[in-house]
Length: 444
Ligand code: FES
Ligand SMILES: [Fe+2]
Image 1 (cartoon, rainbow, N blue to C red):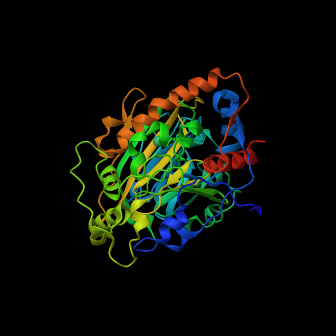
Image 2 (cartoon, helix red, strand yellow):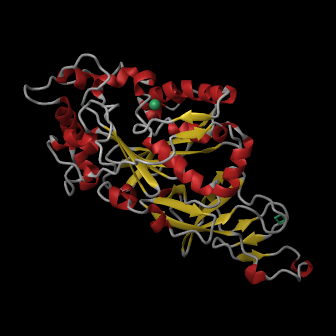
């Protein structure tokens, strides 16, 4: 950091805010690591050209660790998930010796081996019937007498690296890439208190979006757009006084709730803030009256804590910040798990190998008491379907509708742009600057 005081909004800083909380936050939320020097503008062509998409397919996706599924989606030996990224297709399967990943391509003449998620005792190609065991070793060759030239010990499915953290399964096509744990850096230590492995998929919605995958995820990496895109939530949200940090391959934003937006001309009362937070849906019940001397933030945290303690136990104190704030991490390049007891996890990727369409997925990972509930299956929404067709997302579906209104128009605007670079804010667009700095390490 430079000697000079960093430039920030006039609102209360996040660190000042949490220092007044009733139940103190975990140590990782008191860390600050501003990202001072990096890219401040990005070439428009990163979003608008097939050529850049092809560079990503060649130099990015085959090199990075990607979240392919949750472990709970493949609970039994033989359960598998097909994870597609652009023209690549990957099978993630539970075997007798742990979870493994293979390219989803027959070694004979190349048919895609698995068409969908499911269960298989072995993988049998629907074209001529060559087959492989779950671990990728060869099981059988049709008319074996006709293939004396095949070295059966080495005729395996093409492997990927595969490892797990936090209940997620990650894959990397590069067999020489650094191990997952080293790629993650300190990220697991940030999530240790929140135990993501002890959550289940309560909802999983995927939707085709009419914009580049990076453009889509960047709308979920800052609170800067709240003032214009989601003005209805300004009363109780510290949008402009969010904190932004970056470490290694991951970045973090924390947008506090129960504090007024610095953009507001009039300071709302504590009751007005609580009403705004607890009644974000028109059909929500009225918020309770706040007793004298209690802040909206404390009242909101106390109410959220009540229901949660019975589920997660009292082993870890449930801090005000962990139940109130939006704590959104990004692991490069496309994985966005939220911290605290917010249930959100996002994943973004190109749709159908296109530079101008993407898949946005939202998972709700929820804590549970007793036996692990079955994970919700993916609910797929086409490009012309509104998010509100997924009622399991609750209030968030309406917020996404506001984001989705902008995003295809940003794609259109960029395609029409007669300038070379989009401009990024120094602080509030930290996460986007961090992402593009890392991207430039893969695509020079
Ligand atoms: S292409 Fe798979 S068995 Fe021939
Ligand atoms: Fe948004």
